Amino acid sequence: MATYTERQSGSWLADLVSEHAQVLSIALFFLLCLAFFSAMNPNFLTSGNLLNVVRQAAPILIVAVAMTLVIATSGIDLSVGSMVALINATVAIVIAAGVSWPIAIMLMLLMGALIGGVQGWFISYQGIPAFIVTLAGLSILRGAALFMTEGYSIPIRDAGGFFWLGRGEIVGLPVPALLAVLVAVLGFVVMRRTTYGRQVISVGSNMEAARRVGMPARRVLASVYVVAGIACAVAAILLAARLGSGSSNAAQGFELQVIAAVVLGGTALQGGKASMLGTVLGTMTIAVIGNGLILMHISPFFTQIVTGTIILVAIWMNTRLFDRRWRLGKRKTA
Image 1: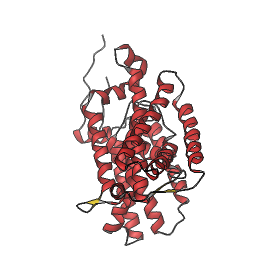
Image 2: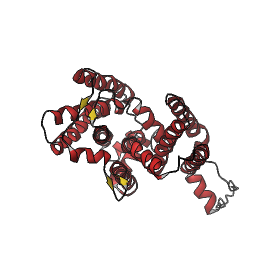
Image 3: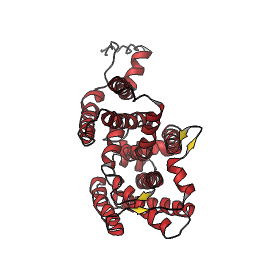
Image 4: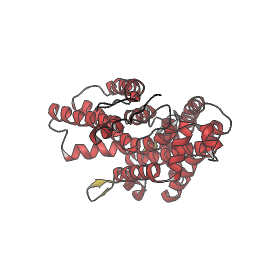
């Protein structure tokens, strides 16, 4: 007769490190980036430059929070950059046409939700892979923006309150950064404390099982794309308010930065696992690298090479390292 022994519990520190290995790794990488760029350029850690970093990172972080929900369902949204460009151009056209900016903002949020809802419907209720739907959206939405603007920038005038959203400060902190922090905190609460957050993870882990236990799996799957659309609208509004214009060429490569931030932060591309804290750290790491390379007078185009490399390494670590559930402590098996 076989005898079984209880597995010896490891140290709490080993369990903590093992459970949060990815977040800890990106936190360490973020600190190393700060140390490296501060050593290479004394202006990097100045308050003015750091405020500029967080102001520029705000639109990426807002969309990355929503993308965390999307990827947690085992999906992806490649259209976020094109959606930002379309809404960015549209809000400038609407304000230039004489619509008050508060009403224009509400219309843009509704527009983002509608676009996200259409994509979510195709993905969830029609069974078309998210990659295909959002790849089509990437082309359609950018093309629509180009058609509306004919490739020109649309200036925004006489909208002081609107400009404050992108350029203003509260107690010395940029308004876009404060909005991004608010969105990140909201995303963290939703994922950790709400039924909806648990449903998102369940759908990503096994959609069919979630459906069989009574969860509205298809509705949850569609809803994350609606959230992504609203987040894109907010990001587009902030970009238009900061630059004072709308353009079909806005947010070029935006989807690459957003996806890089999310996967770098430890959200599994296979779904069923997400980290909002990791997404925040991933976003700030991408922003710091871009800013640091510019201060070092390195071509901004090189940032795309770095971003692509980060995505590849992050996915490799996701699939080859962290999925092995390494433990620091010694384990006894039965």
